[in-house]
Amino acid sequence: MELFDAIRGRRAVRDFTPAGVEESTLMTLIDAAIQAPSAIDRQPWHFAVVRDQALLDRISIAAKTHRLRSESVVELRKLLEDPGFHIFYHAPVLIVISAQRHTPWIVEDCSLAAQNLMLAAHGTGLGSCWIGFAQDFLNTEEGRVMLKLPGDALAVAPIIVGHPRSLPPPHARHAPQVSWVG
Image 1: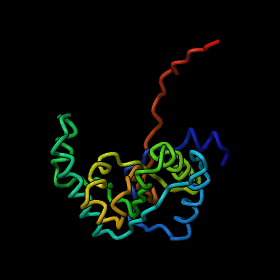
Image 2: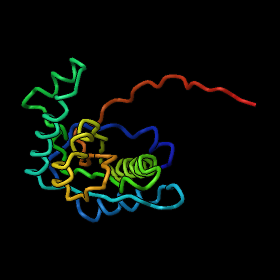
Image 3: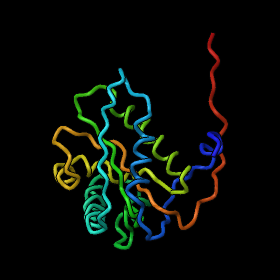
């Protein structure tokens, strides 16, 4: 797959088959993630891989409850209040990219790794989606314990991965806001 085809073809997938993803494939995605640049070449990232559906279900319920405490957007509240809504869309895998809080630029470093991981997933025929609803909960003590993260870790990028049942259509892109300076 050509690079620009991957960039233009990657979608946020929220509809998965129940088929699992091989450990070797997940390691290929993580290897792609760690090829990302990082500030001062610290490569601070850690990858927590969750394939246990019962644990994913427990995290989904806890994350929805946690998010409802602060969510003010009516449409999002309705979604989170729906007992049938699974925050991870029943994907077979959750990969959480985190790093120690005291390391500078970890959000940027982990985000770059996440983009590589999602492009690699697309390149191997898998779907992925960054689950923002989960981030706040995963940074609580309870969330860190569920992921077996150290207390000083910041969960930056919770990404679900699996075999897409269907792909969403592309969304039109807005024209870029560009200022040519100098």
